[in-house]
Length: 293
Image 1: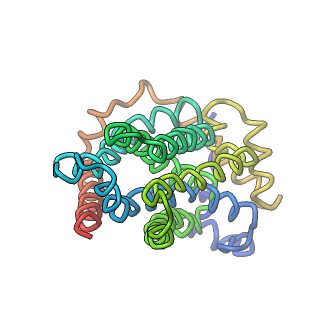
Image 2 (image 1 turned 60 degrees about the vertical axis):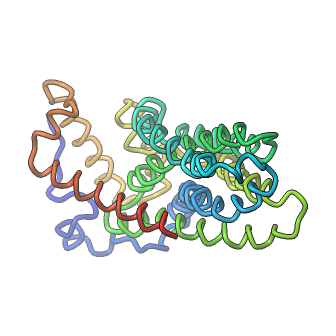
């Protein structure tokens, strides 16, 4: 039997009936802390894309082969993007199989390892390998952070909280310019610029140890008691039952599907195709503008 409620928690109809249950952006410190912790992944993303513009100037001074080869320069810059593409492609599977929390911690380990490799690189080829590793971490984090925040946020403030990830990306880019400026006169210059990026990854890894798994993912994996414990920390008792019913209804709907939907079947839907191309177009525009600067 499918569990249903008149209006989903957070929807306009639900909040019209129960306006006292509406949550504000800063109404729950637990959700806010979870959002900021997950958003560190965006900070890593922004820092990694911004720091190389300053570091490359000093890399060329240390390695004559890089100074003489525009191909090596372009490879050092772009290899992180190659890793990010592969990390993002694998990130969805990692999230679904291992959960949002473990995916985030995995991304932190890979990113921190890449930062160490870059800082200690004896030649440009090891540096390229380090850039690839941080790209993998960034790719997984870029998929995980928005999903984790969205699934752990009340519907009425979900958009604003998910946008925190974008704010952290731009904040990471700004931070990279400050770090570049701070280390221009320090021995090691570019090694510090690239290596210090591992610090936020370690901080996020430690914080994530105290964060919960996504309640939606727990429901999907039939770990309902754990999911309810997480929801209890997020919602008042007056709204808790409705949130549990909503997740139960979504789970029941998933079970009633006759088969797993493939990627091809998704793209047969006109609405999904339009949404995909709109989203992909925005990402292409974003990266094009970013790389111009």
